[in-house]
Image 1 (cartoon, rainbow, N blue to C red):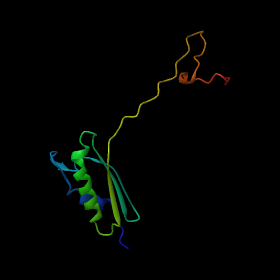
Image 2: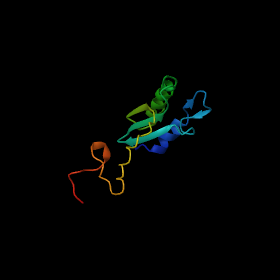
Image 3: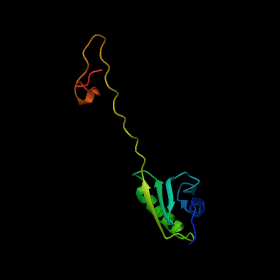
Image 4: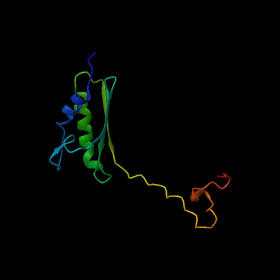
Length: 114
């Protein structure tokens, strides 16, 4: 049973050109994730919602390139879009000499005494 390395997969993916971008998925930094485990390959390719349809052939080509590496049993590629996580608002600070804010959105727990 031949082992498969991430470097072998990356080398194969360097042959997958991205139309209109002047490079391959590796050199353009479009891979957001690569896992090789038990001769199975899973990879994520960054894109945007607007470009997803144009990137579908690239995704399929990545899957085929990874699957063609000797020793790979299966390869799965997905398109992903990075979404900025929204941070919850910081808890309100009480006014000097004032009461603590209440309610779930305040971040304070009124039943807990400090």
